[in-house]
Image 1 (tube, rainbow, N blue to C red):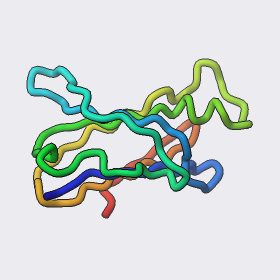
Image 2 (image 1 turned 90 degrees about the horizontal axis):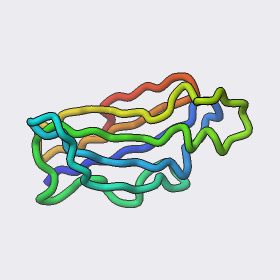
Image 3 (image 1 turned 45 degrees about the vertical axis):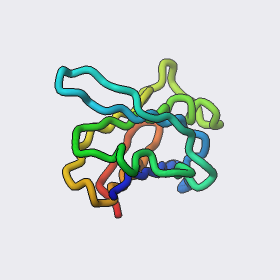
Length: 118
């Protein structure tokens, strides 16, 4: 069975983003979102367990929400109020139920980037 992982890198400091709240939702066909899992990134900017695995890992459209404003508000850099990036939402599709899907987030207070990792 496949599984889903993520990690977050703070590109302003060149370090893993520790303590970021992450929510995973399934995007339903009626446009609603179903909450699946919440966690907090560890000292390596990763989750201690896969976000989705086993029989729960199904083809479909999902969203990862990263509470970036909470993370950067704890840092010493001056932030605007409200912050430019509040919550980063990445909507992605899973088509292969046997594959590993890894969604990295590279983020600063003013920009972000993602890709399908390995």
